[in-house]
Image 1 (tube, rainbow over the protein chains, first blue to last red):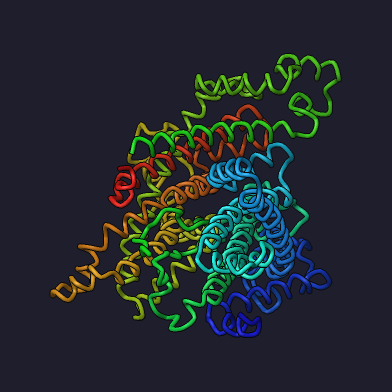
Image 2 (cartoon, rainbow over the protein chains, first blue to last red; image 1 turned 90 degrees about the horizontal axis):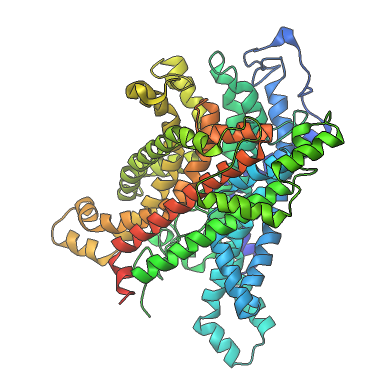
Length: 315
Length: 317
């Protein structure tokens, strides 16, 4: 598909528009917060603790008088860095494993496939806890854990997609017409694998935002001098019995960002699937005309079940 | 079926073996070593060397691994580096909180996800369906910690219906009290997991509504919802079962965070504490227990799924 048409289709979908829009806001905040924040997010003032929201403090202040709005604003930088770094690590791990699992000698290929099947069952947070026990908690631990966890998942879906496409008639026809491996890869395999890959990538970034929040809450993520939504939640949690309202803001920021990444993944998947492009409001969104279920793509279901869950169309 | 179970068992055992190597290796990557970590900066080189010998750290890494893995087979997870008590006893003790929490969360998740998922499929295109679908999409993006805090804010702080945090010190001797303190934590996990289940159920139910048998039943005078419940539901539930393994893995992870938030004395909270104390033997044992739990549940779910699906059963003949 031409790039312009793809982008137009993507932004024409409400999910895509919201995803791109909110992520643009987050990235813009992240860049601006490097140079300027409304107030110093770490400036404490015991006399202005727990102020209710006002024009001076739109989200109010916390137990030590820090301006919650400035803190949430500054923490966008941490989120963007963690999400992008996780995405990069996941891509490197995923593409590496997928290449090892589909392009090498048979025994290497098969053992990598088994290794992928085994590793995909490990929860990301447990990987992170193991790393935190060895190295102490840090944002690097979050990035590496999510990168490994989702890299495996990227490898798994890309590999099965490569294998599916490699068996199709049009690839056979292309080969029969004398197209070389490189050309088949470029013309047929990559265009088919790319959307699956992008969906997994957006999921891995969504998970990294959640994992950063979770680990920072447990005390093994962002250090004290780094503004982070998860850290703020953890700080505010101690006073939840008295000031339950203040936890709304950082939580909302995390939720919207994760939602934007999830929706962007969904929109990319739909916009890049030509079978869904016409009459996209139809039932095709649940199961394509081939009967291959696409399933929902939440952060907890990294891969659609590999077994048939709907009757396959027998060709 | 036998061949499938044998193959799946092999994958389970292989998974445990790989997990044990990875967990062991990761914790041995520790800068310095365990003895140094225990002795701290004040320990003299002599003390560290003595400690190293006492802990068996002067032996080759492979011997240390085999020793630990041999212990695993005998259900012996070694002794805590901090307190010296057997790790197994403490782990079993904590599972009395974590397993009921996970079970209750799963029940809540299924109760929320399946009925609402089917409903939202039947109401597709109508306002209620859109609200359910959007709500699920939104809830699936909510971090578990935040969901827990909001529930605490509403049910414990404002309405004062349930305890905010904690678990009875005498454990399950008063089951009613113990269960009450698990309701909010389980609901927290159940809502977030239920949202994901809802979306999956919805898309499976939409697929079923498209099938000829539902159309035929509708043509014969059944309403669409009756036809779906009567003929489509078994298929929908089957696909839900197939993703339940992943759901349970997510649930165990959420339990670690939720136990910390609600100060429940479970395995997850103990893991968080021990990571902080660098009690590596215990961390090793706890990670191994959690991994075994996740892999075992995955195994059971795969076998159940295989048994339930007549199409997959035919492959064996």
